[in-house]
Image (tube, rainbow, N blue to C red; front, side, top):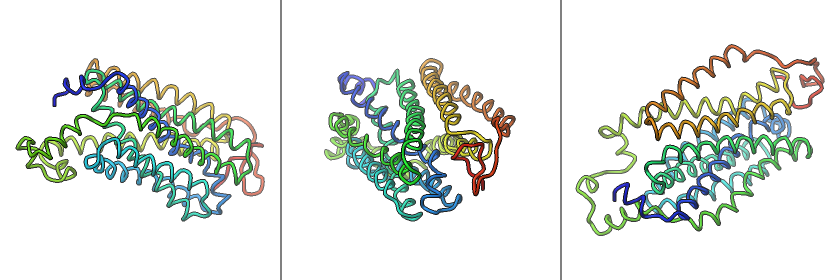
Length: 346
């Protein structure tokens, strides 16, 4: 089935269901990843765990998302994109809700790993389905739109965390914020139920069962092994390097920069919220522009342009990353604060 045939195989409403599903899924993926950035201090004191342990929880969540992306992607080839997405949603919802009821370091680590597997699986399976359903001449912008929802998820995390920290007690605030990450997922099941299955996958399965696949397809081994064969290896290595650098830089900004601003630079939650919301706005705009220009000037040029902008941004981080917020800072017990209650000292 050609790309043109795939374009003609879906109604407008079916494409919209897929798009909304991918958009909502990616937003809550990032909510569940980023929300931890604003809760680390509260979790650390509530559960009596150390700063390195909270860092391990964040790192293992991200590592689990890699595992989830591979595992759910493989599952999507076996049982279909739609079923794989539903499986990833179940993992994400279960991990998010259980995390709110964690009682120590070990339980929180396990539950966040579970959520991380769901995050990686949802993003991978959702993006594949979107690219298979969306019109080929607009896939760059469509992918950029989904990616821009990472900024929406981050903004939602800022708003929910700020509300929870100012409304609930120290032990309840972080639990309420984590619990919120699981509730909206159930609403998405209705959207998922109306999504069409990928017709590319359906047609492939029909040909496979009928023994009518082309020779090169019949000779293919395991899909994971095919990544390391021929020209696919070069694309895989370059893609892994590029996407890995993007994820590391993105997570460093969204997870560790807020902690740096509060703990070491004397910022308060309000300042962090405002700075993060502005960052989300520009991040979403950049992702949408990159997607738009990738359809107009090509993927390679769009990537090069985006990389140049990122490099300039990190130079600015290096030059100005030690600037402290104005206002007195005085020690109170185990805390370093300027009359703000969430900044901690190592």
